[in-house]
Length: 143
Image (tube, rainbow, N blue to C red; front, side, top):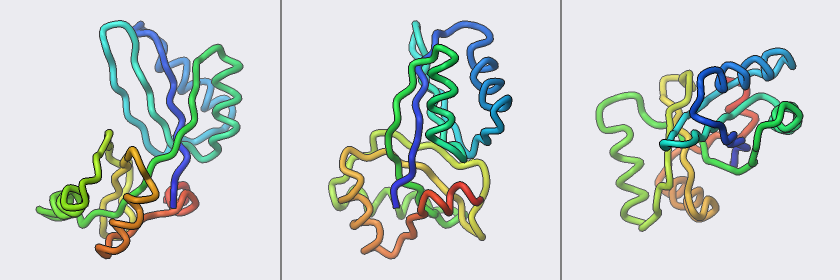
C-alpha cells in the first residue's frame, strides 16, 4: 500500500531541473508524479518514478543528494467534495497531512493524490476503514 518516492535536493539555479529530467530520460526512467517545493536557497523535487532504485543510483551518480521515502496514493472521487471527504476522515482521526500533491493521470473515474503522513500505517488503516481506496506501488506505476 505504500509507494516509494525519492526527494532530490537542488540549488535554486537555472538548469537543475533540466539536468535531473535529462539524467532520468537518458536512463529510460519514467516520471509518474512530481512535486517541487522551494525555499530561498534550495528546492526539493519529489518524484514517483517507474524504477526508484535505478533513479536513486543515477541521480546520485550525477551528484544530486537523493533520499528515499514512502507516500500513500489515494483514489479520490473526481467531483466537488471528493478531496474534502478524504481530508475530513483524516481530520476526524487526528491524522496530520505533512504534504500532498496530485498525480498526473486518473485511475478509472477517480483522481489520484499522493499524501505524506507522519504515520503511514495508521493513515492507511483509517482510510481503508472509511472505504477509501489506497493504491499499491504497482498500481501507481501502471497508470
